[in-house]
Length: 456
Image 1 (cartoon, rainbow, N blue to C red):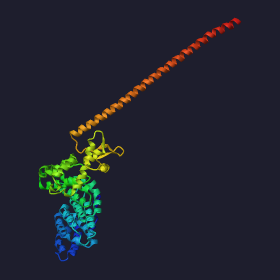
Image 2 (image 1 turned 90 degrees about the vertical axis):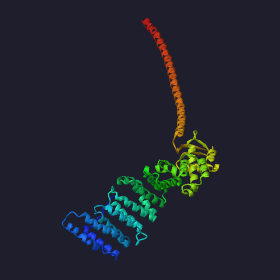
Image 3 (image 1 turned 90 degrees about the horizontal axis):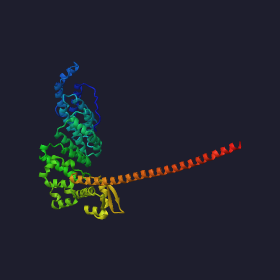
Image 4 (image 1 turned 30 degrees about the horizontal axis):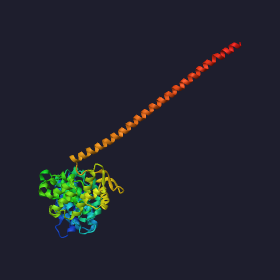
């Protein structure tokens, strides 16, 4: 799998290695034209330049490489143990070209084909060799684009879920940086996203597949939104999103010009998208009664009747929870809105919670669902009005709490003042009693002095 940039270390000059490689290819091709004889005249001036330590003639070198790369299709029939070393030598030679982009796409095409001498391990070897090519290129080198396409093609053809899982971390974490560094045009970016989507789909990763289909859709320029290719991709993206049990947010789709173009080319499919975007089960059942799935855009949703109805029930419950001011949903209301039996209500509520559309608590005793949080499927004037209503309720509740706090504070202050006043009164009474006692003592003291004086 792609990893940090690495370097191949192979000893020998270009002419020595090219001559050796030509002889090896002649041995593989047997009765075909003698490649070594063809390139010998081309190698002679290059060998002279190497001996004189002169700058090599890159045009002459490229002529040699063209013949070597053209004959390298024979490598896929080489003995199993020789395939990887032979390709590594070819990669080393190609990296000495004036422009590796001239040769790498062809080598990648060879490796995308089956390796006849190793049906069992051929895909693994091809991925390993392609990874070597990828990692010997600079991170910003746009040649990596062709190599990555080849890696994805081999993984898809092999059907190896393990190989795809090994590549997946790079696709999820590094691919956006690679795309930015490679500066691909819209067509190239779309091709890569669709390749990833196809490989992910083959590996059973519907989430990643859907993500890259949508990203491919976003590469379509506005002026091409009505083209046949854009229409086909828009139908694929929309159908897979509707059928995917984990996709509930259609914002990225409705924002696409190609999807909007379906309003005129595939009006029934676009109408179905609008129902899943903002409507309820009632509208969906009315639509299906008038428009069978088999009649929508060539029957792309033929096998999805049950999946669509189940998803619509979850979305309907989310809308019901979001639009309930009291935040309390009786089981009977849920059963009526979802067209299910009362005993199945808790199952549907739990499924909606698992889908991340609502949060809350089931009360079997009161037969109601207490909503803590609900996801708005669309957010317009109606939703702003609902939010304003809830904010007003919270404001009144906070005002009530604030009134209680203020009343308690006033009571506390009042009681404190009363206690202080009573304490002051008690202190005043104590002061007067002490003064009377001092007066009495003063009145008694002179009499005692007189008595003493009289005795003298």
